[in-house]
Amino acid sequence: MSDIESYNNLLQEFLLEGVALIDLIERGLLELEANPDNRALIGDVFRHMHTVKGNCMMLGFSRLEAVTHSAENVLERLREGTIMMNGEIGTALLSVVDCVRSSFKSIETTGKEAEADFSDQIDRLNLIHSCSNDEHGESPFCKLDLSESGQSETTAASKFNSEESSLNLESVTLPMSRVNSLMTIVGTVLVTFNQLRYCINQNSGDYRQLLDAMELQTQDLHEEVLKYRLQPLGHVFNTYHRLVRELAAHSGKKVYLHLAGEKTEVDRAVLLSLKNILGHLIRNSIDHGIEAPETRLASGKSAIGKIELSGRQQHGNIYIDIKDDGAGIDVAKVKEKAVGIGLVSTAAAESMDEAAAFNLIFEPGFSTAELVSNISGRGMGMDVVKKTIEKAGGTLSISSASGRGTTFSICIPQSMAIVPVLVVRSMGEQFALPQANVVELISFYGREVRENIEMRMHSSAMVKCRGRLLPLIRLTEALGQCGGMPLLSKNECHVVLLRSEEEEFGLEVDGAEELASLVAKPLARIFSDVHVLSASAVMPDGTVSFILNVTEIRKESICIDDQNEGGL
Image (tube, rainbow, N blue to C red; front, top):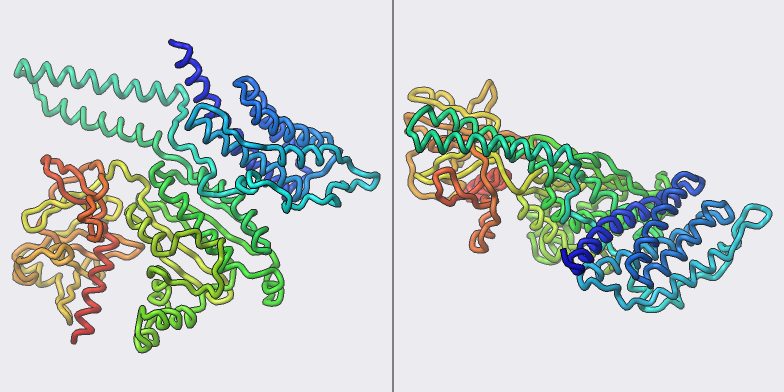
């Protein structure tokens, strides 16, 4: 191996370890601001910073070595107890985290340390280091003028930005047990493949048994590889503690972030698509939802607002809620704004229910903010948030109660790579329904069709299923396919019972073929406006078809029914 290759490998290891350590340091500093007497945590943060400094010195990154050395000196004083942690010290140390993180990005891109000036950060840290507690245990540092008015542009540019915070999803670190497991499966597949090739060449034996064995082994291989792609939601969730801290300070509000379900695992591609989305929704909650401390106290609330970020897995989907205990959404104000900008008529607004009014928030350009804020905007509207989630095959909904807060609920597939599906037919074409949405398959023949299918007003249909009457949607109508026999004239009717957002409905298809696992690919731009399609895939027979978006099929059928009703 050449010297260049050796250095590049060393640099890659340096960055991987450095990013992980900086994340731990940031998390530790945020926790220390709430628990400044946690001696064990101070020791952990000190050791992590010492390691970062040593690694920078080893590779000759002198600027990083200098600023991390100054931070290490301050942490040593904290560890000794000669100064006490407070907000100003936390801000100074977090500024170092931003500097190091920014430099890591430069090193990753160019292989060299950025020409950055960290003198302001170093001066602030040296000033802190020179302080000591007085005889009453108070730190005179609190009385020093450390305002940011004199900071250079470099320091100002190092302000925290959640979109630039580190989230390393490009590399995987595996224990040897997992590597051994993968090698065992691959070895088994290779043995079966050799047996299958011998069987075919010699035209002997039952090759179907070997095919079945290889199918099971391939499924095992898929499940094992999928484990490497899955990452805990906590990898994203934990980055927002810093965001909440900075936004609360900027807005003059008091807010804390509570996390739940951090261990819920989701595909890396899903994590990347969620990162900026969740950040925007948190910004929105702090800017528009959480009230000022005096307003909260006057209304009988705690002065400190709460944002809860939670995740859970259910039916193959990931459900994420962003909930605040703020003022809630003023429905009357939403309707007034919608009428004012011409989204709906006054009559339509008056007859609109609460859920429909909330959906107006997702319209392009809609905002109820009286003042333009640089907290929640940042070039992304709620319409962009919703479209981004839908592009990933998910949904976004809102619930709110006046004076009690607002909840944004996201439902998104756990994995965006390989999707287990049920292949169905419609007008001679194949389509795929995600197995996560499939409850069961029901078939009616002859007289059973008329006994179990009911036609109601406006051509809407219902299907009887285990003592329940559920809405029935025809796939031909959802896809806009022409032709087809009237439903009650059929001698056989095949219905796939589907679940979407906790609601169940039937989807009438021409027939169901098989279960399969398909590799989902993004839709071509020409299909971007066809919401009932979520992805394209190569079908088992080699043709290219589509994976259907069950939620959108249900929504569009409701819209069609409403239009029919309005027309009558």
